[in-house]
Length: 146
Image 1 (cartoon, helix red, strand yellow):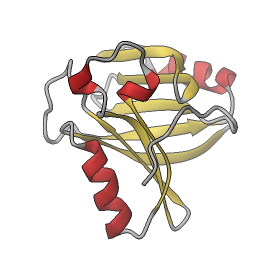
Image 2: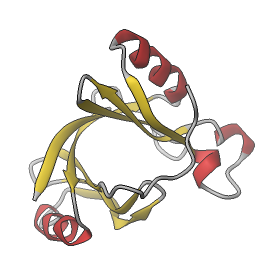
Image 3: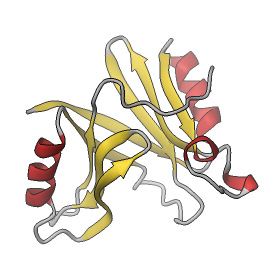
Image 4: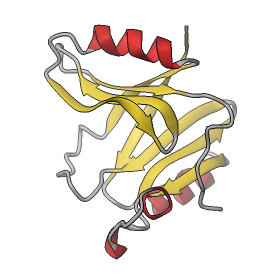
């Protein structure tokens, strides 16, 4: 069962600054903020402080954020997606199978990541960007403190 549809922001490799900014703007609580360097072994030094995934709590609403990353061109206007939050890997697999039919692009096939046991990122046949995220309590990686 889908437990939430949330906004996910992608920044131009200035994610730590953006997390601090939105924390202040919305008086938000930073639930987690994991950098590439914390989650990915052998990350090049110049990429270690890029945000892999951050979660902010804004009055009970979750805002997620990550940096665009060094391997992709940052395109303003493509920097927000809908993120489907799920409770189980099986639910994520079922939704992924349906959304990926005739997808225009699959940026990351459904797989385990440092923050989720089942995560995917794709553009459906209508050109809508989706992230599928299985959000299971206790599945947390190292986090930056703000």
